[in-house]
Image (cartoon, rainbow, N blue to C red; front, top):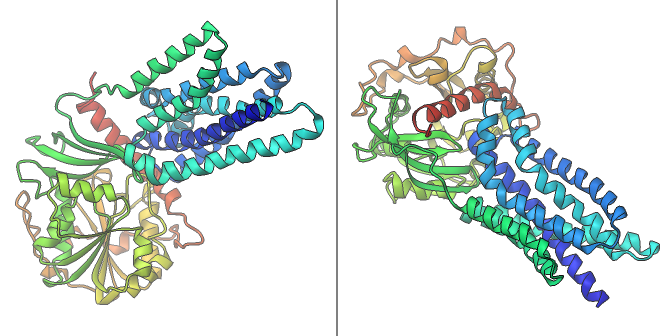
Length: 518
């Protein structure tokens, strides 16, 4: 009987350890649509996970001393932890809606303190209480503590692999949170029911009610905002949405957008059979690339909704695409009519560049996702790797934020300086509009290119007569305070934050203004 009780408590410890890691991963991913997936977000998630567990260990130790041998206390704490975990997907949107106007760092920290720290605190109480329940002799305390923490950590390791590699990519965030919370609370509920204690009915009813609320999706958007697809995965939240192009086109035509973490990545016209971008800046990329002849080999790092692939196809290029999230490829085929013969490799861009044996005439970096910057690509070493897969006379193209001056432009100036340090001659193409509304396209090659030969036209926009009219005068680019970016000292994410916050803020404001229900 004693052995059976010990095994039961160790099983609860195993489940608690798995729930801790599920809570941390789900909490960080819930932040993505509002605060992104940058290093700052993950640092906040890790710190508050440790903070919640620290509080739990302290309080659990005190409770285990005051209520020594009370298994009912353990069961109630596990039920509360499960209940709060179930509530996370339901409460997080409301909480982050209130904290969205804080800075990225403070918004992430405050949000996690409200919806993620409490369940982790209750989970932290579990181990000290179980150790107390297992320990009847002083000389057994160390062994029991070691067993409990080892079993709990093992549960965390297994759950991390399951959540990261299978559950979240395939089932999103809400169902895993609800099911994990219910599993954590199920056995303690059964144990309390066996005591015939009617007080257990209240937490069980709360658990079932909160599960229902979490799984009941409430439409927060107006009828103009039609969600065709939504899921969670490697990049965070991915949605495909049809909605009018307010403030983007004069006629507010209906467009289909690929929205990743609440940031519009691709936007094409529904009436144009999803072939052409609504954004005028998208016309500049293929125009610059058009100086290369048909049949040129192109490597596109970052797929988006496949608009650039279609443009490269119209130029007659042979294009390979590298995309880290397989959902993006599936969405591009299914919802954006990308040619299914397109060669899409699911891989990290830097890994592909380092391992491929192919050679390319153009390598395009279109990998920047709002505040999340893959800084391992834009380094001296990254450019050296890229140079190895380039044909003679090749060109690098990098899509970037529109800020070049001041603190917000520090990241762009550092990219410019790093390209210079890597031996490239650079032109910076600025698309029309204010800094916060435009894009910068870095054009880098070992020999100067003649862009007077550029010729391309999208049906929705005027042909660009002279690309040189849109180049930033190199004499106006002051790189005195810019950094040379390297693998050993990645600084781009920090430099990038100011500009990223501006874009994230503008996107959130755009959707709240036009499509959120009042």
